[in-house]
Amino acid sequence: MSISNSAFAEQYRSVPWQIDFQKAGSPTAERLFEFHDLLLGIETVIVLFVMGLMAYIVVKFNSKANPTPSKTTHNSLLEVIWTVAPILILIVIAIPSLKLLYFIDRTDDPEMTIKVMGNQWYWTYSYPDHDDIEFDSYILDEDELEEGQPRLLSVDEPLVLPVGTNIRILQVSADVIHNFAVPSLGLKLDTSPGRTNETWVSINEPGDYYGMCSELCGVNHGYMPIHVIGLSKEDFATWVIEAKEEYAHNDNDGTDEPDTIKLASSLSQ
Image (cartoon, rainbow, N blue to C red; front, side, top):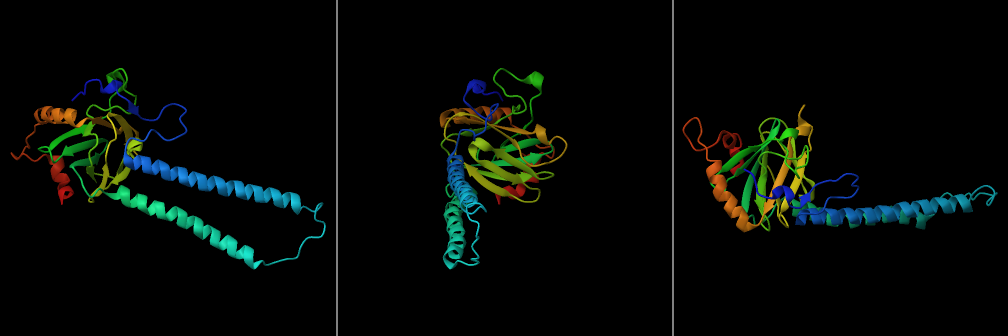
C-alpha cells in the first residue's frame, strides 16, 4: 500500500560521509545518544589525562633530567587512588546504563502491539489490535524505485505506525536469527526462532525511518531492509481502514488465521 507523499517526508537514515548518529526519532534513541555523549566525555577525559601524565613522565623523568632514578617501589596513596578511581568511574557509568537498559526493555503502558517476524529474506508485520492486519515487506529493486526512495532501504510494504504512541513490538523468526534494527528509533533486537523477544517504541514525529537486518542471516542478509512510516494518529486511523480491505486474507484451511500468525502463535502469550 503506497503512502502519499511519504517519499518526500523527512527521512531518518544515514547520509554520505556521516560520522555522527542519525537524528533521534524516539525517546529511546534520545536517551541512547545522551548516554553515548556521557561515555564519550568520560573517555575523552581519561585519554587526555593519560596522555598528559605520559608527557609529564617523559619530560620529568628522562635520563637527562633525572640522572639518578628513584628507587621507590610502593606508594600507598597512589595505589589507593588508581584502584578507587576506576571503581568510581564504573559506578558513574553503571547507574545510567542500568536505568537505560530497563527503560529500553519494555513499556509498562503499551497502547498497541506490533508483531515482527524475520524470514529469509523479508519481514512479516502483523497488527493484532487491528483485526490481525498482516503483510510481507520485500526490498524494492532499483528499477522499482520512485523519486526520493533510497536504494537498498526501500520496500514494497513499509511498516506504518502512529506517532506519539507507546507501541509494544513482539519479535520472532520463522527460520534463522535476524535482527530488527532502526537506528534513528533506537531499535536493535534479535528475532530468534522458537523465542519471543520484546521491545517498544514511541515515534516522536511523522517521517520515514530506515533500518535493516543487523544479523548475518544468510546469503541475502543485505537485502532485507526496514522502512517505518510514522503517521499522525488521524492518518494512521485512515490507513488502518484502507489496510483492512487491502490485506484481508483467508487461510487455505478455511480459518481466518494467517499462516505466519500460526508460526508465531506464542507471541500473544
